[in-house]
Structures are given as structure tokens and as C-alpha cells.
Image 1: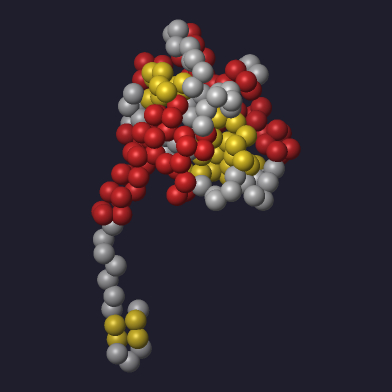
Image 2: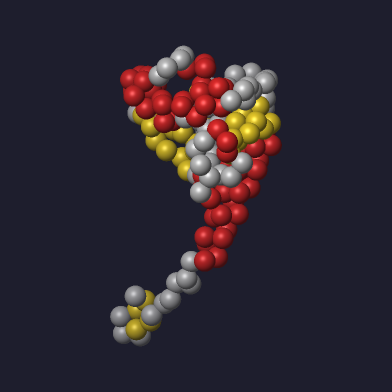
Length: 163
């Protein structure tokens, strides 16, 4: 990692994280502790079993990164470049995009829809609004995917039952 962890994460004070991540409650474990938030709003969480999880808000998924904090500490130097999008944060900073408290970086065209991981596709947003937007986008894509799934067909053989 080129800088310290604090150079690529958001300060945890001053934001109502419970409210900010509320749109994601459906896919998060019921009880987690917030460990870090990347400058793009991805949450690094401590699960009840001590595992470290990452809520990837741009793709609407929860990834298990490490078995515990110690394992995470061993992995962060090798994987932090990707997990924290370090080259893109550096690119944004070089382009003059600085964050104020309560702000994060946001993709103008989300990667889920083919948006590029380039500073030209990044703007500064209020963290709560951005997480609400991405949570709503995730819910809409999930609803659309469910609507697009073919209906399950049942074949009943009176002698053998449902198949």
C-alpha cells in the first residue's frame, strides 16, 4: 500500500453509519461492527464470528475477506490496492478531487453498468446520499432480476409426486 490506511478510508466519526448503511440491511448480517469505510463507500465489517466482510456497494455484494482482524492485517498490504481502489483514489487526488468530512467518491456511471474505473468517471458525493442511491439501485436490479427469471414449472406425476 502506497500510503497509510487512513489515506484511503473515511473518518468514522461525524456520520450516522447506521442510517447510511440502512438500505443495505437486507444483505448484511444482522449484527456487525463497522471497522473501515473506503473512500468509495465500501464497508469493512466485523461479523459475529470475527470474520472480516466487505460490503461492495458498487456491485451489491458482501465478500468474506479474512477469518479475523489478524488475518485481515496480513492480507491488506497485498489486497488493499484492490479493496480500497488505491490507484483510483490517487488519480482522483491528482485531479484535485478532495473529500470533506461526510463525503465520498462516487462513480458517475456505476461499474455495474459498464462505468470505467477512471477519475473522469468519479465525482464527490455526500456519503449518506450516495449509499442510499446505490442501495436503491441494488434493490431495483434485484427486483428486475427476479422479474426476469422464468417461472418455476412443476411437473406432477400422480404416481411419483412432484418432480
